[in-house]
Image (cartoon, rainbow, N blue to C red; front, side, top):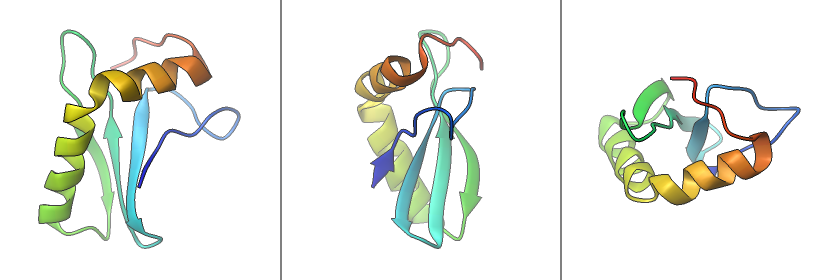
Length: 78
């Protein structure tokens, strides 16, 4: 499950949570026109699942970035 949390719970820099279960989570910082997304933190997730999550975020990056900006406004932190 890919989640973009809104304020006040969440904070910059723009990022997304990808969860397989309550104990398997990867946080991926969103990129911009100059930088791709990057894996920021991994909790209990196997490498192959992190790669799958990253590919999903990269493929859907524009939509995810728009969702972040709709909740938080534009933010160019990297």
